[in-house]
Image (tube, rainbow over all chains, first blue to last red; front, side, top):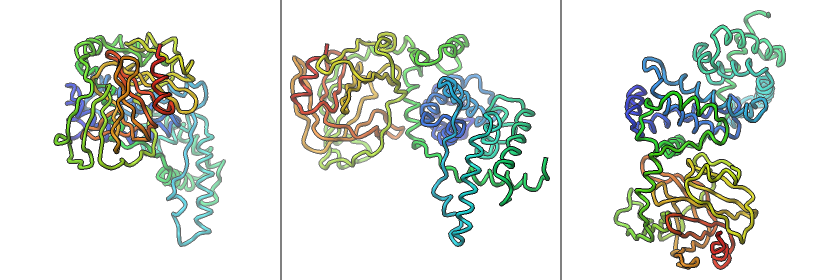
Length: 179
Length: 266
């Protein structure tokens, strides 16, 4: 069952079809919520987003891709949550265990690499909100500029300039010693 | 701006970093089951038919009230299916997936209890009920379709939550004491897995009750394939039913103390 068929069946109220769609996009939705700052509440955000997506499915344009449409809802839910908490959304990310074993033959190089990655991650975390969100969508979630614009609800030009400014700031903060 | 060379490297570095960032989420099938549980009661309305105004109104009501919307159709369904099932014994042959370890399924006070011949594997994770959130006790009448009661023996709860669109109210007291109240006998039920011994029959005033001694896995919703999504490991629990309302009291000490607390339900 591809996305289009799952959506068509969901629109008739077929919950099993929608369940399949949720299963398919659950990990990406969760990753997006966490990356955009939902923190511990990502699970709740994702559930809420899928419930909303189902209720709004009638407004989804069937010739468009489902992924950015869904992630827009996840981003909106995350935004609502962080705004209701009355503070800047937080990017609480940590590097997976694989990051430490990337270069087993070269422990010293690996240590330098790990340190560089930790600092780069911290620098991304400290970016101004819009720049951080653009950078996170473009590189951590690997969305295109057009998808990023749709997910964040911004014009493509704004995504381009925010990404550009964010990258410049990162380069200044972390430096180019390994680049 | 600097030369484009390091710029490209930085982009590549960020892409690689993104791959290394660990974002552990819940199993997708559990998310799907939880979402389905929340959509279940409203399925008679296909999504496209929801009028626009409702969306806008729902958007305006930020925060707790936002999730409280309960369609009239569901209430009607509760009334229709308010038939009470107490202690239905369904013996094994019907067990799905040939899980040989399960010997008996009991349905007691809105709770399905699977009793196997060996103690079940303990659940090591903790998952909240679908859309569980803390509420003010004063808001309960607005959020829940049944009368919520508090056991006077325990005093005011430390925290009160509502879950699954007003289906389940949970109260918490210090020391891991927890009382869940939920209406009707329509699924989703709570699910419990037990090894021997069988639950003990006791009385809470005039009502039949069952004492489930010892820790056991607790679930609430099913996946598409019929298996249960585990919530957490529950402590000793007393379950009983008064009219169409079901109660489960967890962590209140021994059976005598649990019955005393249950009897004090105001």
